[in-house]
Amino acid sequence: MTARQLSFARETSACLTGQPAIEGAQTPTNGAFDKREIVMMLSRSSLSFLIAACVLVPSAQAHITLEKPEAAVAAPYKAVFRVPHGCGDSPTVKIRIRIPQGVIGVKPMPKPGWQLETVKAKYDKPYKMFHNALTEGVREVTWTGKLADDNYDEFVLSTYLTDELKPGTTLYFPVVQECEKGVHRWIEIPEAGKTAADLPESAPGLKLVPAQRP
Image 1 (cartoon, rainbow, N blue to C red):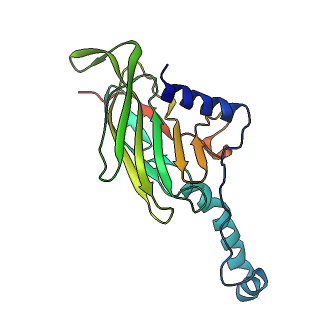
Image 2: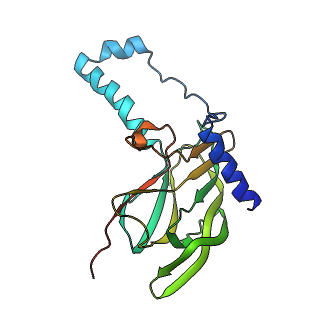
Image 3: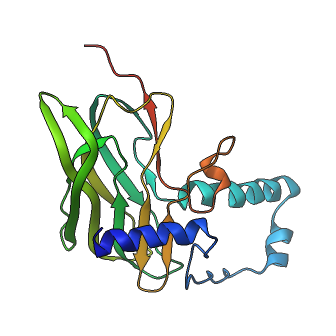
């Protein structure tokens, strides 16, 4: 196991043992209006709508997610990871993605201004990709650069989803987002009966569907 792989494993272990998911995150400052002024300006109905929006929208927008959350097995898949924010207002300086078993032929897209690194290793078994049998490939991808909290960006992988993956299940890609101050560990996987919405830092999930017929 390389030093980078060991670091990733330690971060995953830290999450499972209850270490805080965010280190050094800063609390956003309040707006120009105080709470009493806002309440006076809003009707009860619009206030209720605002409360619902404040509760629901951040949970949907705050996580790192996949642009296409559903894909067929035994087919190529372009994984686009959407990064909507930093750690509090601290800029993102590194994105690391762990490739799950059954995802092969991984090729990351370079980004101007970002350093790209990959870690290759043997697969748990040989996999077929078109007419080739692959025994090893990229298992971890790291981009190092800088993304301000005010900005949005995407990190792209070209992959192949093998027929060994089971349709009807969800495949998770653990991601660690490092910032100048703080870190988000998007590595949590929901237990049976739970969903990603139940977790503060859930890993990006991909719903698998049956292979398309020729």
